Image (cartoon, rainbow, N blue to C red; front, side, top):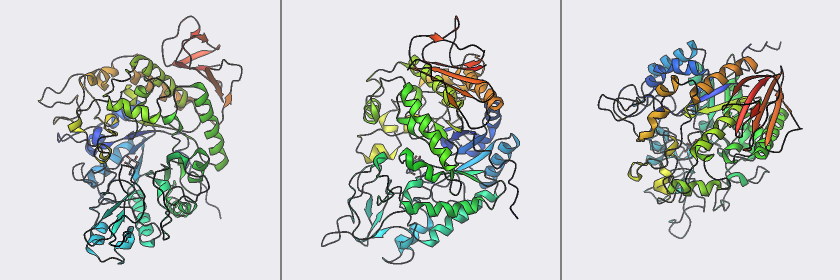
Length: 551
Ligand code: NOJ
């Protein structure tokens, strides 16, 4: 007999999920690194913000070769961040506050300190211990050439040689050896990890590099001297990314998720073309996949319209719900992206970081206007919104962290050609002034911050914004409260008779949303204005502003 679904089985479909990068959120013990108890202490803040769930970036034991995405032990907490008991307390406090908890899972690679990798290094070539990872002999008469021309995401070869002459594969840093997912032991161990956290009450998982797990390792290894990014051929046959056989892994994971009631949720990080994304999000697999379109899109009505239309169609076809993302721990914060001239593209943004944020000079006021207008637009869409810590404060990128303090492996491994992602990972400002108690942070912790907070951070602090009714924080709180009331079925109807730089749509229940991407005011539709991303005057919607209207 078919079981009745849990009444909250679909909680994730239209959830607002707040990403916490734990080392940079709040530090309760003064060692300069954010920790689990720091998150627990801020649960009232998260509740007041009105989010439905928290996604916790990796908090596992790690040497931080890649900000925690180099995991030593998947079933423990980094002692620098706390203990399993601290984790349980945080989870309990979040749940008491009605906030669910999603944890990051990193299945493509472990760290080189993981017990399995240490065993592999100590074992002989061809041994079962090596078969959990991807070890190969090198090319050339002495085997001193890498087994293939594959490159790491962080620069340089994707192969590193070990003392006995073999090479191992790492699509990221050398400290992040890739697992061999054709090995049943690897598959079993990850199912064990999913159960470990699910048994502790975790509600879902964010799946790192979901599109990378299955690899074609048939010899000779196929040539692929550049990482194809989004140009991956869309037929599932690329040797390293988005292969068709990756999906059996997630079907097995779904069986584990469905052992729980409500079933555990999941969201794929899969840098694949829009048309392939829905495969990961099928109800028989992960349920959702991040839609990163808007991380690459300028502030532009047509680009937003296209992304919205395509993603709603893709997710409807697969039974998933859409996801919307403007910022995360891997990209330049969106108020800064939108403050720069359009058309810079990824390389232009990298150049801007290398200029310490001086060339071109950002128009911060415009950046913030566009950022909040975008947020209000996306919060009104069907599907889930993933917020990145600090965006609710309107926080900007820190492009001028002193070079000797940069910690991202991208900076080192590209020979200082790319600065990397530290500028969006600077610890959050909680207070207006730097700590009096000798610390040098804005309320992050008494022992300073592991990445330096610039002087302007205080004006973006929670303390400053909590008392300002016109702050970005106040806007997010209002919008999240209203969204809970207004959000209904996952449908939307575009208003077609609007100027080209205006985007407007209706949701069920008389909820009308209008965004003016241009700079000339347009007439406001009639109805009650529920919230707007900027000041309104004379029945007009000013440029670069979004309003929600009850018709
Ligand atoms: C994606 C994560 O978001 C990023 O921070 C990390 O460096 C890579 N995956 C490797 O795990």
